[in-house]
Image (tube, rainbow, N blue to C red; front, side, top):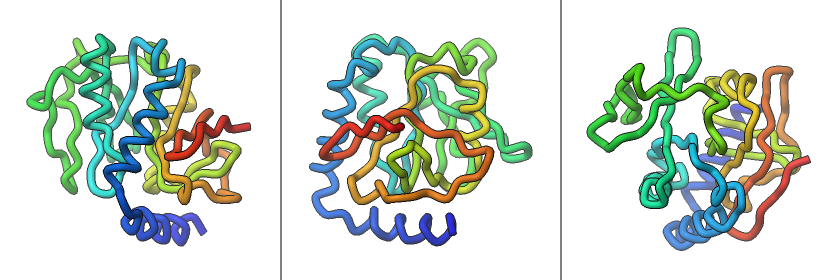
Length: 184
C-alpha cells in the first residue's frame, strides 16, 4: 500500500502548478514559527528532484547564524549520521544525484544536539505519520531523537491515513502552503 501511495504522490507533486510560489509560501510559513526562530542547530536535507527546496533554507539558516547539519546515509545498514554543513564543496555526489556531506569526525552532530529536524516525506497524515522514500533511514534516526520535528508539504500531500508499522516515527508538525498542522 505504501508503494502505491508513494508512486501516486510523486506524480501529484510533479503536477503542482506555480511550484516556485508554493515553495516560497511553505518556506515563509516555516520561517515564521517559533521552532525555527529558536533553533540554533537545524537538521536539514539537501533536496533534489521533486522535493521541496531546502537549499534556500540552508542559506537562510546560515545567514541567521544557525548551524545546519545534513545527513550522510549508510546504505549497508540503512542508518544516517548528520554532519555540520560548511559549504557546497563539503558535499559529494554519492548515488542517484544525491549530495551528502563528506564525513568529517570534527563536524559530526549527535541526534540530540539538534534543536529542530526537517524531515522529508511524500505523504503525511494528521497524526504525523509519513511515507518517505522507502529506506526507513529517518525512522531509525528519529528513534534516538528527542527534539522538534517538522516536514514541508503541499496540502495535497496530507491524506486521511498512512499505513503504519511499529518502526514508523511520527513528526510533530507539517508545514504546508496554507497551514501549520500540529500532529496529534
